Amino acid sequence: YTDELMNFIFDLGYDSYVINEVCGYPHMDYRNLLNIPRSMSLELMHSDTFNLLDATKSIFRLPVRKEDQKTIFDLVMPCCALGGECCPGDDINDKSCCSEERVKKWLDGNKPDVNLNYYTWKEPRKSFGRFRYRLRQRHGVQPQ
Image 1 (spheres, rainbow, N blue to C red):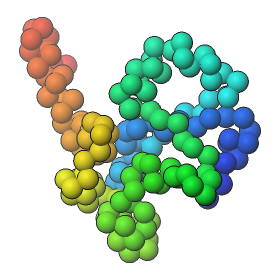
Image 2: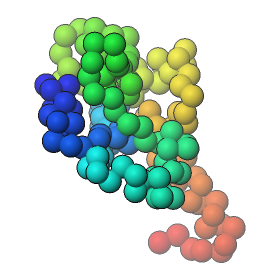
Image 3: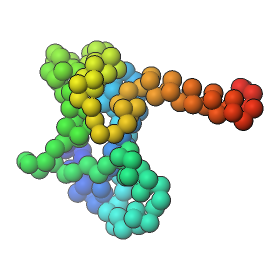
């Protein structure tokens, strides 16, 4: 269904971009999409925010499905395919399918070329909490 939806959005004149961070829990392969009218593609080159996201590999354009191209499933979290290392079995709704524990284990042997915090839920939030605490300490701001 997802491939058909992505092709439908493309046929409407939009390019789809995957925002490369987990947007749901418990499955670590949930991602948000940004759909931009193709007529505005040239405007993206003038966006500092978009260029920063692109430079840090926090966003990437989703190719339209063709026989020789990868799908969103191949690009985001390939181990989460049904029957894959992170989702053994045949039930995509199983709580253990693409769980944070399984994904972290898979990432140990399959290091992506982007920040690992893009692929899990709890660890980035702990890391951000520690960072925020240190900033507040440095600037003498009391916790709220």
